[in-house]
Image (cartoon, rainbow, N blue to C red; front, side, top):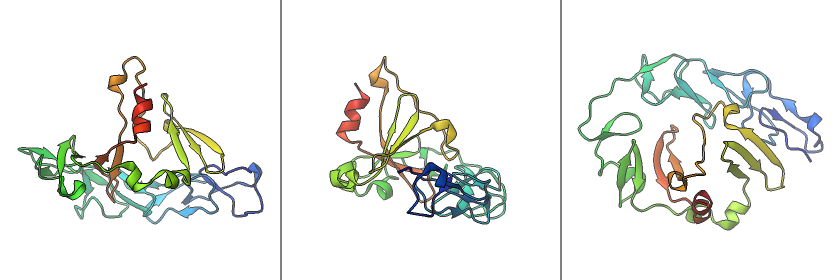
Length: 227
């Protein structure tokens, strides 16, 4: 059985050959493998046939696939409404931020280093680092999804060169490169000569896809990252 790659779909459960995979039409997208249908982009974004995501019509905007909306990227705002999280096709412009006496959050707002993380971290709070909360009481990965939970989910692994391998619960694997994913920014690298410079974190995101906090990575991941 063949799982159709992202950007394609197979509406029939009775057909499983790679030739049965159909490209998503223009103005739709499929961001996951083994899709049975494509999703509409929405009125503020667009796509070509076979797309894995949609492109925002307005500049300096990012497409949120779960909500099918386009919001301003971090530290940008809508030219008319001033709200960076409003769905729109108009361009976003740089938002002027104040010089803060302490530090800023990921949106550039002035916040206190020690007192601004209670919302993200709970009653024990945390400290800001590059705008993100480092929680004093980190949430254990196993308390969110235990071993039985993880066994029922697809697995994602990232190689030292940045290749992403997706393994489904049925054993089917798909390999992607970071550069081929338009919805991601940055790159992955692993320093084999100095394991002390390698660190792996589980990152929390807000509804607007801004970084909010980091959680304790599993002991397994922490071990293989330093060997």
